Length: 301
Image (cartoon, rainbow, N blue to C red; front, side, top):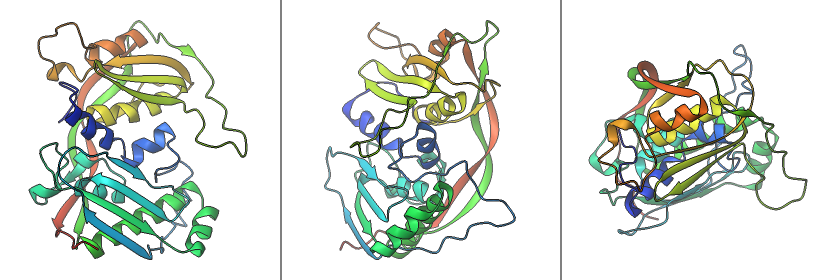
């Protein structure tokens, strides 16, 4: 597990990259990232994705410090990945975090020491854009995952399968003292025609002292999903709290990752979260993982 022992420029790049987890980004409302939605179709009528990218460019990113990022609008046939690891692409294509991608050669790993990263640009025609625009979030997310799966199979010769395995997890609970958060309403959406994304119920801020999660009318389920990103463990919401809350959580990794504190960093998450009247407890839980059977270095184009 990688948490936040010291926030160097290298580790910050890795943590920024972890924020592309499809499931968790849906939780924080990042609308420009493909992510599963809650409005799933009935099980009796599962949606079958059929779309594919028409034009794909894959190039290896130059070595050394580089900006990392994803642009993957759920209702648009466009994908742009900048200096990302192959493991992250495989995770995004299957709706899991990179740490739930198992096996494969060393060059796929999401590690600061691994300089094998890729720039990927993929697009389709206007008809594909029109179709995605008319789909529900859930259906469009399935299409975008399917499109990336096909891209990886074609350019990386990826073969993989899904398994469920017990892995370390955390449960998010209400402390005995009860919740210490104010209730609050989520921010309204941006007015029609206004440029840029509107305010979000949850915002992440990276600081030399650690990570700040700022909640504005956020649910506990969303908080759990964001904590998953930073702690790299499944976080299961068992608070039973159904409302929306305002809070400010500042932390620096987990207690198990801490070294002697010089006073310049924030406390571990187990300590910091108690100020919200919450607690985290270790457990094991079945989790969906992607096992790489085979993968090849892509030829540039």
